[in-house]
Image 1 (cartoon, rainbow, N blue to C red):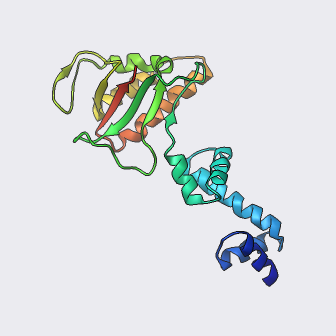
Image 2 (cartoon, rainbow, N blue to C red):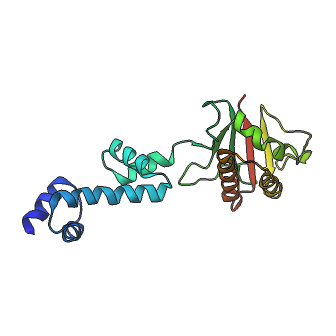
Image 3 (cartoon, rainbow, N blue to C red):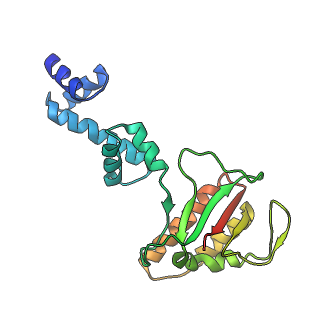
Length: 202
C-alpha cells in the first residue's frame, strides 16, 4: 500500500488521507484510483456549476485539472436561454437583476441571461402587457416596452409577468422547455432582486 500511495501522489496532488481512501476504494489499483479522483472532481464541478458532466470534464481539462479554476471559468460563461428552433444570434435581449440603487448583485455565478429576438418573441407580450409602468429609479411613467433600450420591472410587476408566461400554451416541447427555463430564471432572481432589467441590443 505504501508504494501505491507514493505512486498515486506522484501522479496527482492530494492529501495522504485522500490517497488512502481512493486506493482502498479501488482495491489498491493506482490507475483506477487516479481515474476515480478525476471523476469525483468532474462530478463536483458539474454539481457546483449546474452544468452537464461533458462540459465539466472539458473545462476541467482546459484548466489543467484545477477544480477551482474550472468552476470559476464555467460560472463566468454567459447564460443563454433558447428554444433551439432558431438560428444562433447575438441580437436579442439581456436580462439581469438590480437592487433599488440600480446596482448589480455580486454573485458567484453570472446572473445575467441572453435570449435571442426570435425566442423572446414568445414571451414579449407578457412583458408588454404590464405597460404603462412606473420606472422604479426615476418614477417616470413608461408607456411601452422599449425593444432597443432599457426596461425596468420591479419585483411585483415581474411576478405578474411570470404568471402571464405561465398561461402561454404550446405543443412544441422545445418551447415548453424554453418557457420553463425563463420562468425558473426569473423566479430565482426574484427571490432576492428588487428589479429585473431587460435590455434590447438591436
